[in-house]
Length: 271
Ligand code: KIV
Image 1 (tube, helix red, strand yellow):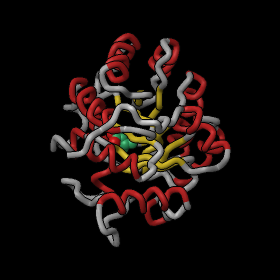
Image 2 (cartoon, rainbow, N blue to C red):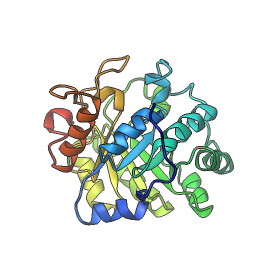
Image 3 (cartoon, rainbow, N blue to C red):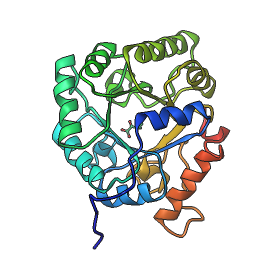
């Protein structure tokens, strides 16, 4: 059985390391992670960031949406991932309705950091009230714009956001507002590559894309999609990295290399 040592001499990456990567033009690699074994494999492959996403509601729990995910689920899975992490920066999602007010956001973010071991929390939408309040309490925050899975019942379907000019201008303006409120990172999900490229160029914080084209500062994929072991259909913006790989570790390493060498995503994975 694998032994996880808490006496590792490897230093975990910090938000400053990620910002430095953006400044020197090095792409940031990120995958979602939900347990200790995958955390160890992802970390060993050199991936820079692990996101304990509320996508676990779909890929681990088998729900149709991320909405049923509870704070207890997020704390549990974040702890599992943190236990095996050595170098990768760990971000955890605040789930649906856990940040209805800035105070709720702070209490729940504190759980993800204290009990879960997260270094940063992520929330969806232009919630500058919560971002500013959390940052004021010393809690690093990652914003999330574009397709917002927690708003699926308002959106009606998982579709590309920001195709129309007015919509694109709002996403761009919201990105600036989140940076001004103190967000340290931004995830852009399913937006046109041109819009994501403009936002990445205009913001000084790292912008991590998923279905957002090659010009973001980094890329994230849902682990089970890129291993092609998801319960649903693999999204168009993902790639099956198991193809040609001898095992899971090799597939994750191939993803890391493809992101670093600007070989992923290609136009076929972009909008
Ligand atoms: O929950 C998640 O996995 C995410 C990614 C899709 C960015 O938020």
